Image: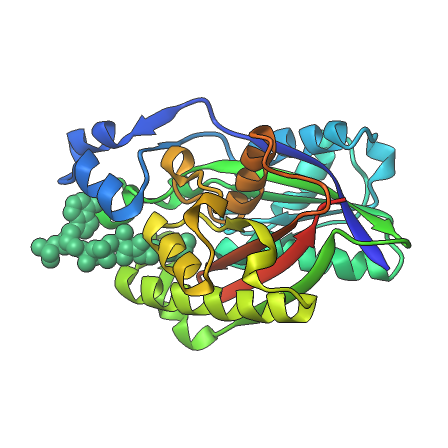
Length: 306
Ligand code: UT7
């Protein structure tokens, strides 16, 4: 069996917050943030629901489908609008969908976890699934904490996945989780995001490299066969370190963190969309999608666009 990516959409708040603007209220600077992270600005605003609705509607239009075509909605989010109910049913309702709808929380690996879940559902009877990554991270940021405030941004990205008995865009997966590292990146009830940045950095490079190598091996290809790396966008230095260890030159890596910061579950679909807008997605070519995040969780997939 196979699964095809049929359409993509994104939703971004209009409000741009630059590093210089953050430097007005925080003991930080554009120079520090750019040098240490690669981030220049981020978007702030909306909600997980409102941004997710925009991305989801656009993905369905992009797939040349109607609401009636969609038979499941999976929302990857770390920042649901409420603890209960899940945000996915509210997105579905706002869009006019009446299919099953649920949230998946695997932090920054969330979109890839949702894609993996969709793959399993398509394997067992569903026909077309809307997968959305949507985050309202700014709501859970202490804007007086320079450690986190400079990193995160809001946004959403979505894709429609369709069952295809004759071939697949998704070739292989490698997912994992290690809850013994849970305390490295947390947001307690009623609190804000807190992180041991150095340790997350160290582990992130390792799990991206390991899971990417496993996904490459099970696809039966090597890093040389990849035309694109579409990584989670946390820090340019993490992407550089992982790419270097994998033998992927940075020309092949898609970078959006300079404009959007770290948007957790939304970063991989936002990066895919950016690559497509820039003519970098080409039929028959292989790409690596790879994410890691709080949990810790990680997820890599090899795709080959049809
Ligand atoms: O989405 C998945 C989760 N997130 C991540 O993957 C993030 C992983 N971690 C990172 O990206 C990096 O560790 C950070 C960007 C968070 C921090 O970079 P770093 O190179 O590890 O810096 P550091 O924490 O070692 O801090 C270096 C210095 C410190 O000052 P001293 O002790 O050398 O005097 C910090 O206090 O930079 C200081 N610092 C800042 N200075 C200006 C920390 N944050 C800032 C800031 N502006 N925003």
